[in-house]
Each structure stands twice: as structure tokens, then as C-alpha cells.
Image 1 (spheres, rainbow, N blue to C red):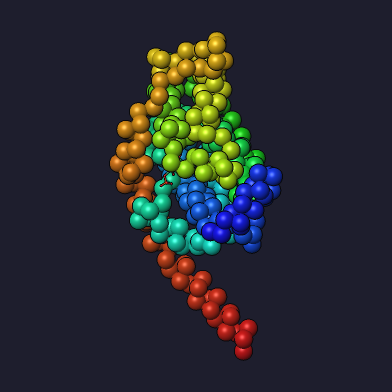
Image 2: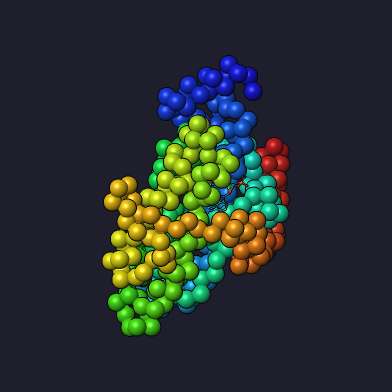
Length: 311
Ligand code: 3HC
């Protein structure tokens, strides 16, 4: 890229200006945004699978309606984000192809199974809680379409988190077996939720450039720490124990010290070897294949309409 253009671009970023689709941008800025926004969109769509599993198994009509509404919201979040990514010159078909052939990722958290109803509580409370931590700052990201998509997404995320926490409250105030299920769900979800924020800052390959371009507003470790600090008191309120013996309040720093996630597990999961990676991708592959007839029909219809208008 032309150094003068790069310098002028950085002045705009440093001044807090929003970069819009038709503006000049460094190829690296475009590339890393397609990567992040596309993977964010994939996360929303793949994220529907673990919860979709429990819509037909919800214990009451109200819980079923809440979960159905949440899963539908996630589809909408995926839509906003795919549209934001398309403004960077990539098509949804290309992004789907890159998801299915492994060139694009989705959030590691969705490669874990949802084994009991209490997992619906832990997912809403912890996974959407972590997503809120990560998405609220993204409302201020430098790329206009992404920041605006985040404003809409964040409005719906608090409902997702609250309905999950409410499930956990019902379980801990239930019988001993329900309380055990809630603790088991916390035990299995806690560390995968910490991994959602990405590798530790020292291992984050994109952070420094993404921070310079205000694509990333806070570092991975900053947001992870914020999540721990805000969630530990919530677990205490529920009477549940965070599965980390090293968790202690540090009076000096004003934060909780905690044991780091198992980063081997993290890199294993994001390279395709998590408990559910194969299931999730084959579910998406099946959805893509099953929808082929509809895509072909829409394309044929559009072509016919175009020739009719020409005639
Ligand atoms: N899952 C999968 N891959 C991850 C990951 C995770 N939790 N965390 C990091 N990675 C990948 C990165 O994508 C990158 O790989 P790549 O070059 O192939 O893309 C690599 O690990 C190195 O990580 P970096 O920290 O260098 O990468 P980033 O600067 O992109 O930071 C991120 C990672 C914090 C996840 C950032 O991409 C981000 O903020 N993304 C937008 C938010 C997002 O995607 N959230 C998904 C949560 S799920 C969700 O929101 C749905 C909700 O409804 C529950």
C-alpha cells in the first residue's frame, strides 16, 4: 500500500472516524476484517446448534419460547454480520465455502456438547455473558458496518444472558439433583467460556495490528479478566463453585487471580479436534446441501425476472 495513503488512513483511525465500505482502506485492514467479521457470523450460526438441540426438550412452554426466541435472534445476528462482511467484497457463498472447508473458523465454545437442560442455563449465563463482554466494545470498532451491526446485536444479547441466568436460578433453588446439574454445567462450561476471548495476549497474532486499527478495542486478556471479575460474584449468588482452585481475590490489583485455561486444549479445539467439531461442520454441510435446490430456484427466478424486465 502507498505509505502516504496508509498514513492518512491511520490519522482517520486515530481521530476515531468510521471507515465506510467505499472509503480507501489498506488491503490488510480489509483482509483481517473479512476474517474476523466472517468468523463472528459463522459463530452465530454454528452457535444455534448446541441450543437448538434443547428446543424440543425444554421443560416448560415458557422456557421453550425463550430458547426459540434466542436461537432465532442468533440467526439474525449471523445475517447482520454476513451483510457487514459482504460490504468488504466477499460473498456469503465464499464465506460458507471457507467455513465448510476449514479455511474459516467459528468460536471454539460451540465445539462442546450440551448434555443437560442446565447447560442451557450455563450457555446463556456464561457464553452470552462472555459474548456481551466481547461485543460491547466492538460497537466502537472503526469499521462502520461492523460497529452498527454490533449495536443491534448487543441490544438482544442481554436478554440471552438473563434468560440463561434465570434458568440457573431455578435449578439452584430446585432439588438436590437440579442443583447438582447446575454445578455440573458450570464445571463443564467455565473454561471453554474463558477460551472464547482468544489466546493470551502474548500468543495473539492479530491483536497489535487490530488494536492499532481499532478493530480490537481491548486485548483478549483484558476482556477475559473483566468477565472473571463480573461473573465470580454471580456464581457466589447462585451458591455455585467456580471450578478453579486457584481463583482468589487480589486486594492489590482489585481483580481475581485465576488459573489460565489449558491452551493445548484451546489450540486443539480451534484446529478441528474438539468434542463436537465434526458434528457441527457436518450439520452445516447438510444445511448447505439441503438448501441447494432453493438457491438454484431463486437464481433461476431472478434470471427469468431480469430477462422479462429487459423484454
Ligand atoms: N474460537 C475460535 N478461534 C479463535 C478463538 C475462539 N474463541 N479465539 C481466537 N481464535 C483464533 C483467531 O481467529 C486467530 O485465528 P485466525 O487467524 O485463523 O482467524 C487465532 O485464534 C489467533 O487469535 P487472535 O487473538 O490473534 O485473533 P483475534 O485478534 O481475531 O481475536 C477474537 C480473537 C477475540 C475472537 C476476535 O476475533 C473477536 O473479537 N471476534 C469477534 C467476536 C466473536 O467472534 N465472538 C464469537 C463469540 S460467539 C458469539 O458471539 C455468539 C453469541 O451469540 C454467543
